[in-house]
Each structure stands twice: as C-alpha cells, then as structure tokens.
Length: 304
Image (tube, rainbow, N blue to C red):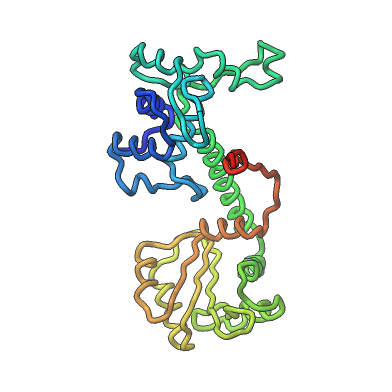
C-alpha cells in the first residue's frame, strides 16, 4: 500500500501509546510499519534529499504535532508517552486525528501561530486540513519544483546561444566535475578532431592517464540509435574505452539500448541531466537564497 501521509499516521501513532507505557519513537516506527503492512522497499524509501526515510520522517512529524497539541509528552530523550489529554481524545473514539482535529487544542494553535500573528488576530492563519506532506517534505517538494523550473530555463538559454557557446559550456562543466586537467588542455581538446563522430577529447584526470571522447549535439529532436552507433564506431576506430555523448534534447529507447551494447563505456547525458549537472556544480547559475533546516541535537540535552 502507499506510504500513509503524516496526518493519517496521527491516530494510529496515538493509539500505539494508549496503554500508558513509555516507548521510543524507533519502536513505534517499526510497529506502525507492520500495522500498515509496508514493504521493505516502502520502509526504505527516502525523501528527495536522500537523507531520511520518508515513513520515519512522517511518523516523526505526526509525533511532533501530537506533542504540540498536548496529546503526547516526552519523559526522556527520544521516548514518549500519552498524556491525560491524549487519553481523553482516544476515549472520544475519533475516526481520524488530523490538523483540523488538533486545531481544537489551544496549545496547537499557539504552536502554529507566529508572534506577528498573535498581535493581529485578523492575520492569523491556521494549518490547512488537506495538507498531506510533512513540513519538511513540503520544503523539499518546493525545492525540487524550483530546480525543475531552473533546469528548463537553462535549456532554453542554451538553445538560444551561439553554437560555440555549447562547446565552451561542455568544457566548463567537465572541468567543474573534475575532468579535463587544466583549462588550457580542455580548451584545446574540445572540438579538435571533428571527424568520425568525435567532437573532442578530454583528459579523465589531471595527470592525463586516460582520455574521454566526446560528442556534443545541441539538438531539439531526440538522438536515435544511428548516432550512437556512429559514435561507438568512432570510439572503436580510436581504440577508445570511454565516451560521453551530450545532447540538449533526449535519447530514444533504441539509443539508450544501443549505448550498452558496445565494448567502449558510453555515458549518455540528455538535456535534463545536463541542466541538473549544471545546477549541482554551479555552472550558469547563482545562489539566490539559502535556507537551513535544523533539528534538535538530542545528544546536547542528554544527561550524563
């Protein structure tokens, strides 16, 4: 089944503490995983940042919201128990506990209300009941969308630039990724041969122990198998072991399959991946804003 959203987890999470025992959040994560019959793959599924399991993140946020509403308390680090308010809430036999339910508790409303909003009641905003993603997931989703929009804008700018700009861009990107040796060496290599399906040769490392053969095409239509076969033939002619084919468009399924059927290692970089690499390595983009998401350092508050 799909991984439940953090609001759906609130009632089962509170029920897992119904007996009044103190339990660690790790223990509850495991219990809820069994209750929702999540597969190992679903339990291992990570947030877009790749730093935390999605299910564990949602359980943690459900716990945070229940705690802020006064339904759970934390008698010791990373361990929780149900409060009298939490017991009373379960006694009412709710079919669901979510943000709308928690809005009935003043502690929770205060938690979600900023200091500015406290001084101006007309501006107070309450949590949206239909919210499914945890706050951290919302940040990551928005970041991912901004990155997709930026990638699309990069490809538009590349398509409108002069042809030799794309060649320089490829050089700059490979340099930022640690290839090519010096800028002077890389500049001489790109576009040097221009024959047999090879647009350039660049050092794999700063010592020049191996070479990578390049093909760069600023195309609008997808690159097909014939172009990959031509590139592979050129690699074989030069006895090259490694090749990178970069395009601003995409590759057909036949082209993707063809790249795996040759002696030389051929890496395909389409427009989407090209733009992502540019963003990740700071090429053609500049930092507009930076936000840090911090968590409590439990070790700092741990008693000796």
